[in-house]
Image 1 (cartoon, helix red, strand yellow):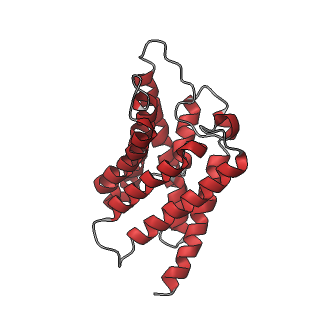
Image 2 (spheres, rainbow, N blue to C red; image 1 turned 30 degrees about the horizontal axis):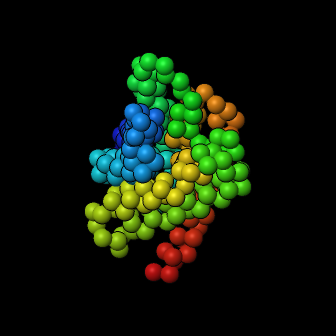
Length: 230
């Protein structure tokens, strides 16, 4: 596949992740009085990754997330020359997904953007968790996400099932961490939502770049140990 094709796949994959996952949070989580709740939102994020991994994963590898790209690069499964282009495509795709979501959501009478499914700590955390709790959560959850991805896509893993494991893994991560940070584990998703939030989310965005990428890099390094023992 050409680089342009790969970047297109990453663009559309991340677009769908943000529109589907954040869309479930913004449009359906509490609608009208009893919506899908955070359980439904968790599954929405997992389903976006699962569906796009099957749709375009064979084109680009199905990262849809700068942290995933960094983790795979650290594990030696992704080329350095493609790292920055992938991240740009992911952020642009995610931002367009958030923009489309904003256009839809703003059509409701009395609309207020509020948090717009953004991530945060302190007053911006759904459960009012502090910075330390959020950093630990994001590092550990992203570590486990990358560990699942690296294991599920290994040559010795059962063929064809990786998207299911990855999608369910992301669902579980959201079930654990939505109350803490509103679950990022994805800097592109966090950036896209923060751009449209009517809060101080942009001022806290650095956490949701640093912590997920740190967790992903750690996972890549640990995976190298397992790969070397084969």
